[in-house]
Amino acid sequence: GSLLSLNSGRLAPEFNPFFSVYQRGCQELIRRREEKPQGGKLSLDERAKIRAAMDETGRTQASEMEKHLIFLATASAAGPLFGILGTLWGVLIAFRRMGELGAATLDAVAPGISEALLTTVVGLGIAIPALLAYNYFTHRVAKTVERLDGFVGDFLNAAGEGKESEPEAAEPPAPAEKPPARPRLRPRIMPSAHAAPPAPPAAEDGGTGKPQ
Image (tube, rainbow, N blue to C red):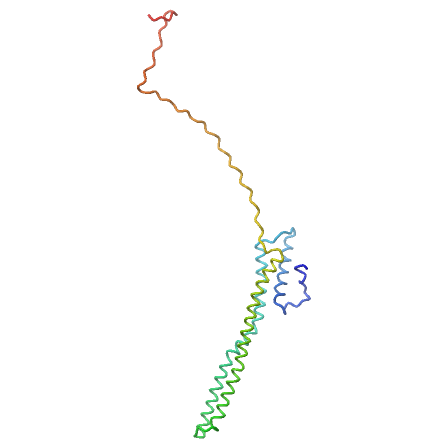
């Protein structure tokens, strides 16, 4: 079907972070296409804005999933401390009973030791499951965030915007005009210094041409 076929308000996005990211991507894609009535591929800047909007929604969903993990973290950290506090309190009671009775009998120390062990068991019983659950859900959230990042890329690819538009081929530059040919200068032949001087013109004798 169409990429935008699931973009319906009848579905509840709060139960699925992928749908929330998908819905935000559809909204941004529709808005960008409406801004380009002539059609064509989206520019790199427009694709980056769609990805940024989807990433923002993904971070919001990740924060929503992580907001309850603080209780597990607190329980796993405070449980052992609660057990240690109970142990110290039980030992304190045991020593107080020993001081009152003046002897280290079983009747004197048993109540305090039992309370110490009980509080230790309760503290560990709270901390161990909380720590296991915290690690499990933290891993799940991290994997979900990783899958959301891949989903954003798949969405852009499915929208036909995964490949960058090829740049238009530039027109070849026009050949440069050749400059006009310069006339070649003939070398001037300088007379040699040792050359004989030219003969004087012969005198004419009445038109006979004979010398006197």
